[in-house]
Image (cartoon, rainbow, N blue to C red):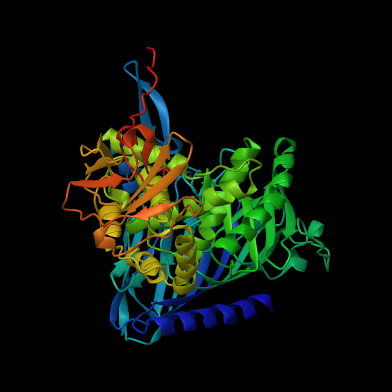
Length: 634
């Protein structure tokens, strides 16, 4: 009953949201899948019924499906990318010696026929009539028997035959920690179609995009396996093993060799599961909140860390609920599997060994994705920074919240990463497609660190209260809607009243940098006790300027220079310190002069942006007198 109530609730949310944006539409899907797993051969067969609703104004003559498993084959685009990129993902390559030199070899290139991944489609029909299909790498192109008119539904049925690849990236079998099945992006998944058209990107290693819908999935597998994943298990009493600790009673003796696990996942855009014979299963109930499930290997070396992480995971979810908005599902699962950590609908697959700090850090990040990737769901292929960056921002806040010792700027690591990238000379704009970055490292820093700073720097621009209100309104207005970069910008403008188009443009579509400096500080020549200060804009990107003046008597005074194109005046971030609002600074003027009504001899220090939230790429010209860095001995 809970799942059906949730469907109704989410439908209400969607209806309310759509009413606010009368021109908005999105497609809808209802999946029904029955899957039988041959665990010994790591193969599976299934059938799928998909009811597709065309809510677009377009008449659709073709549709596209993702066949992600096909990426794990020698000669695939993913294999080719591994062999051509300068810094391949270390998890996906082997280090070998060639002529005495160490080189990196694609793990995919060496997969044997019984180790590759594949997903083969047969018997594809539209409303019972055979349709023409064409497999192109990780994409299935379908020419429809009958076009789908706007506002109409159609039913697709198909059979699929899959093989689980040796675990190389995310999905696969027998990962580094011995988990047998990490089943992410394992089924034929229809591609997203929206106002921009079809998003049928080949799978080259990045993130995923999908259509929201309801999943009804039956998975039949050897009875010795324990499963966890997306959705709600509807037949717990039939399963028994692994759920007895959660208070489930087995209603009959299990005499069969296999069991069928029946999951329902409402209003999600993917479905993931994992299975292992040695999973332990813990349940942790958040008061007035979701039920947390933890599935991890029965390994004495990790049990204490996982047990310790359970209440902290609950604290993190409660904090995320308060900070962004309520998690809209009744369940979330943390599952040992995959590689590193990866977010999925209502769950995450993560590595479970290593330190406790590493474990809780990965949980904090992957669970934060539930708000940005699995409720808001921006297109990560085009705007990876909107998900990874905003998730990193929330993770930073959450980890600081549960830390014994709090820090003033929990995002400082992202600033360090961004400065490193700028100094490397390899930066590309955030508007670069995720598959088109020259270096994996640049993609990562651009998406995670620079994306994090997009939000933390808005604290500097519009104030902390306005930024936190922006996050909540953004989540409420655009949940289940695939927001674009303009949507977060417009939300911040609605909340604060500031004009921020320049910020979105410079920060995300260019590699323009912020660099302001104190050019000159001089005493007045007419004998009056005042000091003239000349600032200069060196970088291309404009910003408003906060200046803190510390006097020799220990007192402080601040000055604020609004940015003309913002048409905005930020509230004083330090109300206990006197602030003077100066005339605005127009971007076209490379320098700015103002006066401090005290003698130069009474000034101990002048600092541009004492908070450190403005990502100025050259800090050594931001203070007067200039800070002398200690000499590094070589």
